[in-house]
Image 1 (cartoon, one colour):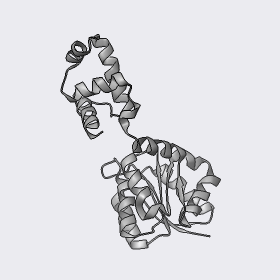
Image 2 (cartoon, rainbow, N blue to C red):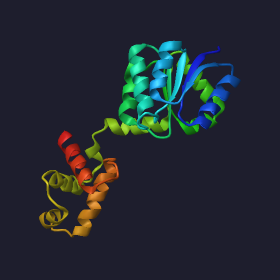
Image 3 (tube, rainbow, N blue to C red):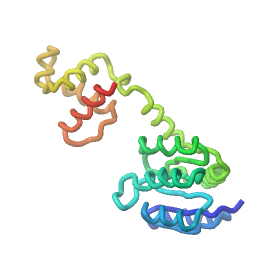
Length: 215
């Protein structure tokens, strides 16, 4: 059944590719936009059967597309939405997939678009009220639902507890009677297992301490 769709993607070549693909299988693209604000305006103006949107878009080039999709699902309950992304933005992904009881929504990694038959089948399923979630997205969301400290070894938990108390690496080494090299290895493992963003060392120590306190 032909659908009226809106495509939101700031990369021109990918946007044109999606338009061509959707038109070839019989759908009508009523609007194609390159930023989140234009997506919201287009949906309000055209009331499409389904929207396909990227996560990372202007104006901030962070997760504006995903935030817009969540907002539109609140404004237009039951609006079918398919989010495409190069990565999993976990916090808003949960909000999107929880909206509307999880009906008529999908979250796929962009690499899945290359499997044209599967991609177009996902469009039809979402438009009919179904849910389509990329297997990689599911794996990451399952990890998010778990206590992040469960990933840490007993020694890493001990190190993290001392980090939360404000100890330096030298202080950790003295407290635990191990070398600073061993402390550095434990701290690195903690940052990796807690999925803390690479950045200033001090900032990651604060985020690790907060993770410990939340748990």
